[in-house]
Length: 112
Length: 113
Image (tube, rainbow over all chains, first blue to last red; front, side, top):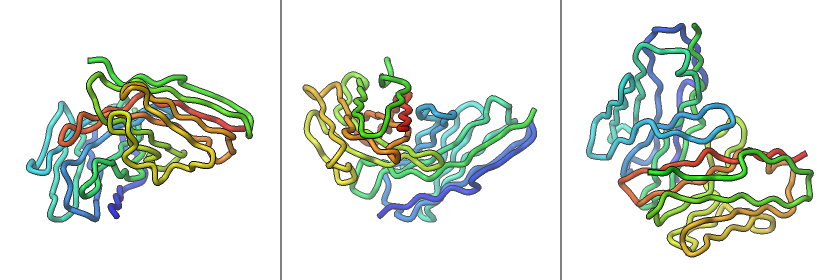
C-alpha cells in the first residue's frame, strides 16, 4: 500500500525567502507525482505534474524534482510572497492504480 | 477548458439529515473520483468511476453513502443519514487517464451539527 509523507507539517518564513517542501513515498512504481495547492476550506489547484521519466518540472517561481529510486520529491519556491501562504499537498497514483494517495500536506505561512 | 464544477460550495445540516453533492467533470474525462478531506488530513478516496461504472468503492461507507454517475458525465454523492464525523470537504476530481494527472473542483464544505 502506497504511503506518502510530507515534511515539515508547517513552515513559517519571512517574505522573500527561498524554501523547500519535502515529499516521500514508499512505492516507487508510480506513473507520476503531482503537487497541489489548497487554500483554507477550498479545493485543490494543480501546481506541477512530473512524469516518472522526468527529473523536474518548473512553473514560474516553482520547481519540483522527482527521484523515483529514492521515493522522494521536493517543491522549491523561490522568493516567497504572502500570497503563497496555503497548504501544499503532494500525491502519487498507487502501483497499478490511477487512484491518488496524498500526504497530509505542509502548511506554509509567508510573513510580510 | 472549463474546470470541474461542484455544488453547493457550503452546506450545514443537522445529524441524521440527508445531503447530496453534485459534480460535473471536464468534458471528455472518463474517470471521476470523489474524495473526502477531514480537517488537517490529506484527501481520502471514496469512490472511483470509469465512465458510468464503479471501479473502486472499497472505502465508501455504504451503509450511509451512495454515489452514481449519470450517463458517464455528471455525478452525485449522497449521505443519508449524516453523522457528526462526516463533517469534511468533499472533493470531486476528473482525469483523462494517466499520465495526464487530475483536475479537482473547488469542493463542498459540509458541516454536520
